Amino acid sequence: MPALIFDCDGVLADTEQYGHLPAFNQTFAEFGVPVTWSAEEYAEKVRIGGGKERMRSIMTPELASHLGLTDGAAVDEAILAWHNRKTAIYKELVASGSMPPRPGIARIVEEAHAAGWILAVASTSAEPAVRAVLTHAVGVELGQAFTVFAGDIVPHKKPSPDIYLLALKELGLDSNEAVVVEDSANGLRAALGAGLRTLVTVSGYTREEDFSGASLVVTSLGDPGEPAEVLSNPAGVHVPGAVSLATLQAILAQPGPIAIPSTTTETP
Image 1: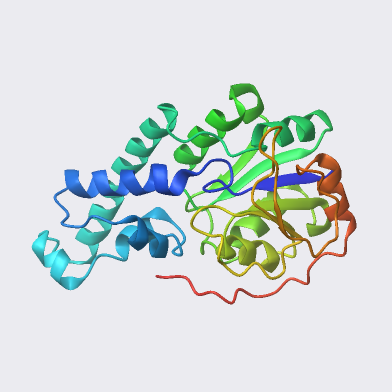
Image 2 (image 1 turned 180 degrees about the vertical axis):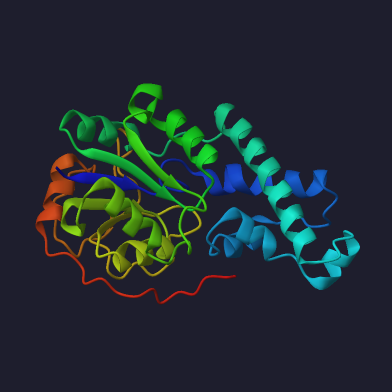
């Protein structure tokens, strides 16, 4: 049985600029952290996999001293508290409807579910945040059909392939049975590292990234009135204005990538 595995942020909804960024900045303000990321600064932070890891990237010795964090344990405790609050703020933003689903998500999920495909999400974001976005994007009933792999359940986050290797293992699949939908070069590297065929739907922060190795790169999955624009089509599949289940099946019929090690390093 084939599987369709989605990333969350930038794939299910345009969450980075309109969800995560304001949630990070509100959290910093509430905790008295003298940091406010601009949209341009956050475009660099999204290259770091994981919210806690992005927060840790600001933790200079000077900032730790300013905040009264005297040792590594105190820093860890502070970052965990910040991240918990940030996740709660983010979930409120999702519930407010400020981040509508990206074109084609609900449509392709309905098609895949009706055809008996396995559905999953593999994300570096915290599971409560992923569940909130997923439910808002596809509804409660379809959301319950998904298996979610998220957060700190693997040793290394994207671009490491760990999350996808875990998903394959837990779902009882091999790499020839699944198509991944990603939006970033880090996510693509993670999927390719697990030997998975990958469809990329670029987002506002990722359009200029290197998507070498993707089977297909489009502006979105497409919907009536919002057609998908094909940016790269190495697999040579047919995209008649929208990515359909037939498109995914054609991608699966192509030779898969050779599993490669990640070429992008994680920020510790």
